[in-house]
Image 1: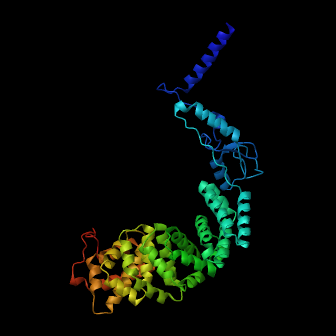
Image 2: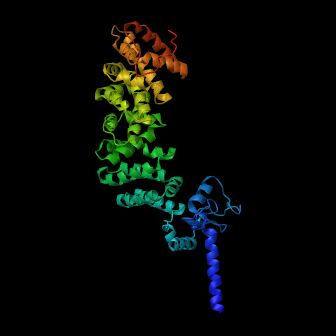
Image 3: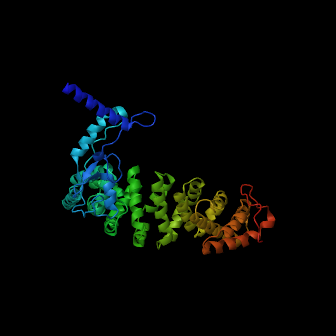
Length: 444
């Protein structure tokens, strides 16, 4: 009788629990045990870790808390003695068992998380790379770099740990060291180092100092010219890092044989939008900042940069569009560049279309290029470019630009352009049917 009574009571307790979990439709709603919830998000923990205060949180949530500059326990407000959370394998195993027990309710078992790399482990790997560099042990260094790549791909947290512990600087120093030695023997290790470096971008000043050495830059140019797509992409990203803030590197790069041709090829045969934008940025720096910019512009014009840029501008994303127009604006500072642009049938339609269409920067560059081309035509008897600009609706676009507003320099160029165009308006009707500006008030 006692056993039967106990069983009935236990069954009643079970039934009572299920009733508490039934919703209005009579369906059972599974309640996650309190110990399995993260105190921050109140969600089921996927990677439970314990702080020095003894409180367990989900790793992702507590790391965000610490990275935000908080050095106290969210629940107890106690100061943390250590910022390295410890994996709580007991709770994790209990959560996994609970998931398995309730799989009939659609609960999936959480996978066993990989233990993230620690600062101590990162320092150990980087010190071994330094030793391998001093001994010129290419194979040993390559194996360590491959380990870094593998760990950084596991999680964003691992990547941040490597970056914060100076991996970019260590890898740049290793790249410089092996580029100084026999290049043919070290191609494999240099390629892996550059690939790992691309994960660490942007680099700090010290790292850029190593990557910007003469031997390292020659190696980057060689990779940029080689047929391997991954090499070329990583090489141009490395060059972008160097020229972004240091004009001396721009000067050195512009003097290196094969650099301009390799950058042009990367735009002509694009690998990905990131590499295209990087190539355009490096070229822009060269043709606007280097002492030999006139020589480099002439070389690019002979390669066919003007037609390539205009074809790129027909259908491109904002970032590429802005940088391509910037390069074209720099090219049009030269007589050869302006002549090639005037002779290209795409110039006027593309430039006028980009005004007030993509961004303020594209508008500024487009107006600047139009101003340079129309100023050239104004000084000559042939006004075909000016007439073509009128035909595709440049006059009304510029009027609208002045009404909408723009920076002072662009405003001055737009005003001068309107005066030039107004002199030729009687030669043809300039209303573009594609632009709905018929009711716009005209001050002229």
